Image (cartoon, rainbow, N blue to C red; front, side, top):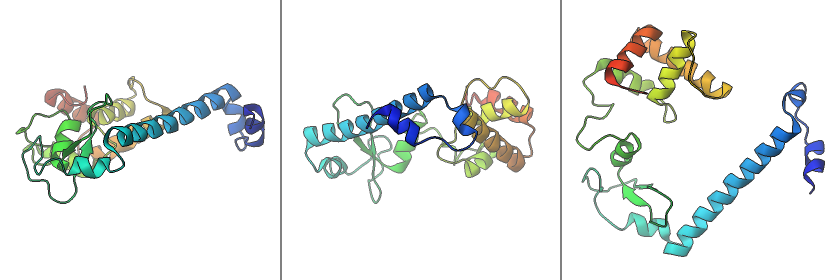
Length: 186
């Protein structure tokens, strides 16, 4: 199907049509197509390198987490360090969390940290929310330059900041000062 014909047949509703120029819609189509192609190629690479049972083989490579040393029981997560041909690394949930948060083994996790504010925020923090996002939300509530983000991600950052303010009874500036002291979200 011709791209022009697709764009004409699938117009955005109402005023959104005037806000989304065709060149941006084409860019979004190309970007989504590229993401789908990349995902399929990564899966094909795993199948080529390791066969159709790649995930099962990776999960069966070891009986303990390479990061924490904990026995791998139950749900084993596969961490893809870099897509350079190396197979995914099997880790425990805590090991995967340590790697994703770039925290050295043995350093207390956010859930076990003695800091009460960190504990309270960690309880309400969703998997897609980060300290950087909280910092951006607090800066927006103070009407300071947020430092990037799309309108949707900025709205999510403000929502996260409001929840954190509510549970900790801190002001946006108080949370920023606390994050500065803890060097979070820099």
